[in-house]
Image 1 (tube, rainbow, N blue to C red):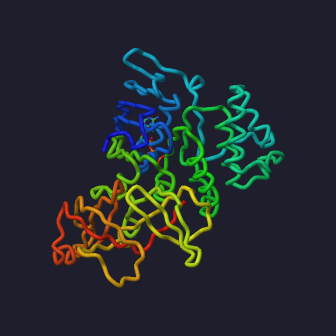
Image 2: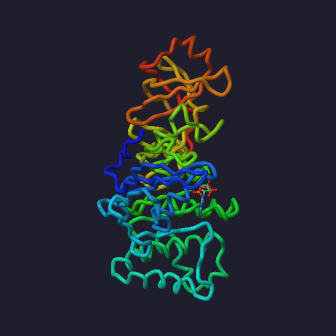
Image 3: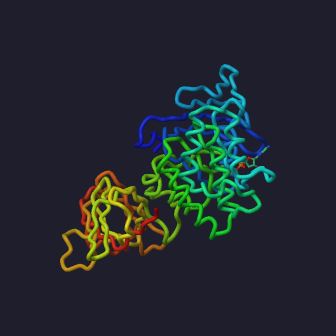
Length: 367
Ligand SMILES: Nc1ncnc2c1ncn2[C@@H]1O[C@H](COP(=O)(O)OP(=O)(O)OP(=O)(O)O)[C@@H](O)[C@H]1O
């Protein structure tokens, strides 16, 4: 699972080795050229330290940071690019805006740091993507927590970064504000062709935003890979309990208006879900929970379940309760998880390598 994501060449290759008292950071990361890499892990696992090393705010004594061929750190040759020379944008938990400046002036401040035409264009796009055009004359004190954070993101983009870093940007917001900001982050993910590294320990943010995931524990990489693969790992349940399942990126391909249903096509087939009236061709992120998938050895007849797929059983593991098994399936290119009873596994004579029918009861639209 340590290969780069399916999205292409690695943009950023990071090797850090830093014994720091009781904590030893030892990571070897391959981050894809575009999309969001989520650094996920418990408190103290080293997420922020990795982010600060990427930004050049910390210097690991043994380290190499290579952003698509630009060497930002190479300790073998005592090379270390200081933070102000690195084209990175950073967004922190608290949006640290200049309180005495309007939103527009805050953004211009970011722009002044680089002053290029391209940066101005990037900022213009960011204002549009983040929906803050109507806030330009406001002072920061008149912004909601969510609006502040969107302004802080636009300001980070005004420096025309080649890498955008987020350190738990939603952690300081209450649940309602988090819900308000997440769709804007999803727009950034969809519309910016820029590598982004996003630190969180919130499963919801991982499921909605990650293209690529790095799971850290005690300074080490437990797993890294495309989000679908990491979520389908049987030995590393990131979305615990009933939430366990996968996310799938799909495209809205057809609508059945009479039934208020929409068809989403993904790398392994199609799924029908409730129509939300988005334009055809829209990208969709779907969540399939393991408990909503059931397996059959023959095509089910007379079932009310609308979504039927064909897939191969790749692996099986004991689940939390001895009555249950967790089955990993491959549907086209897409990995999926099904939670079934151990009795069903035995009675159906299921085996690894077997092709089965998969009924999907609920498809949730995440984004
Ligand atoms: N200046 C320092 N000197 C020594 N150890 C440090 C220093 N700063 C952080 N650490 C240790 O490094 C480890 C990783 O910290 P880090 O902040 O990177 O974790 P994290 O995964 O981001 O945690 P959180 O989610 O709580 O922010 C912790 O054990 C922390 O105590």
